[in-house]
Amino acid sequence: MTASNPFHVGLLARGDDFADRRRELADAETILTTPGERVVLYGDRRLGKSSLLEKAVDRLRGQGHAVALIDLATASSAEQATNLALRALAPCLGSGLLDAVQGIAASLDLSFEVRTDPISGAPIPSLRLARRARSESALPSFLGVFDEVDRRLTAEGRHLGVAIDEFQRIQHWDPDAAWALKGATERHGAVSYLFAGSEKALIRGLFDTRASPLWKQVRVVEFGPIAPDELRAWIWRRMNDTGRPLDHDAAARIVELAWPRTQDVVELAHAVWEAGGDGPGPEPDGVDRAFDTLVDAKAPHVGRAWRDLKIDSPQQQILRVLAAAPDPRAVELLSADTLTEFALGPKSTVASAIQTLVDREWLARTDDGRLTFDDPFMRRWVQRTALADLGLPTPPLTGPTG
Image (cartoon, rainbow, N blue to C red; front, side):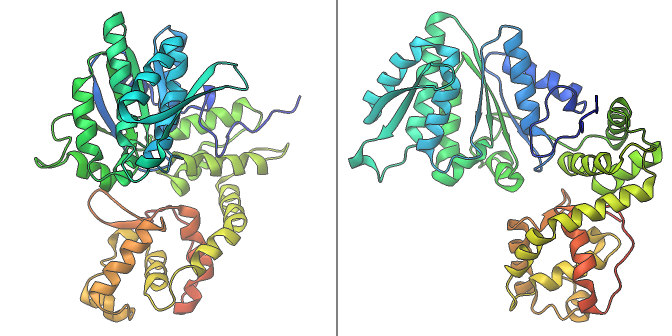
């Protein structure tokens, strides 16, 4: 039987796809089973936070614990978030949830209906804002669900662990959301919370100063990248276990080119595995070819994103300057010398353009405020496609930090 590719792109990491994170997993399980815990887990996108939450919740369910995972990544309003919460909590609370929802609906002037899950057949309650209250914030309905859940669990002497992914989105729906969240979670002794999110600047603003709403109200844990050595060993093992023998140097090259984002590393490993065929495993130069093949595949999407950048702004020129540097973090874009050498324009204009590139996820800021490319494949596209505009050759392929 032909082995299948062990590196899955675009899916949450499950089973053997989950690369290590033993310490983080143990911590998440402890948080979700300790009454009254409130912890914020934050870090860059594509590092595996969502996979960690799902893994922890699945393991705890298997051990008989009451846990729920609420993913707010797709929610565009507090009303939608409320219904996501109800769907996630329904299996934990059973028939008692319907009574709880009726109480919430009555107290918050909401309409209420019950639908049937087409797969499990379980009742799924749904709340709707009353038509006359459409202009009001729906955030109380979201937090009201947890108030009612905590009240019922306390009465029954039970505990529930709740993981909320991309929790910081509530701040986009209501400017006072974090204060409301603080007040709600302080009341809940029967529910423990593990909040996770990737908008680092926004999340830090919620707890990093004395004036912040969550200042000293939650324990804060930064979620960093998997250590390169651990990723190299994991890739080497997965390759060899599925009939694609891999040289240790090639495994190291995969990590070197795509680290620190776990998803980028897995995507490159997937491409290397696919290119392996039935022959001997690839050498490091085969990894380079697989990397450039990925860049080719992404070129239409990246090209559209490039064309969406304003021509009358220094956005494209900034990307060229950073892509040409061996290490983009070393470039002082706002220095007088750089502004003059590359004709970037006024400092204030460049600062605004940089923020736009960060918002559009072309660039990312390091913890010390330096700039780097958010995606190594987009960086390589700029190197291959746009440096000729500066009269520069395409540089050798190197990792994101040179």
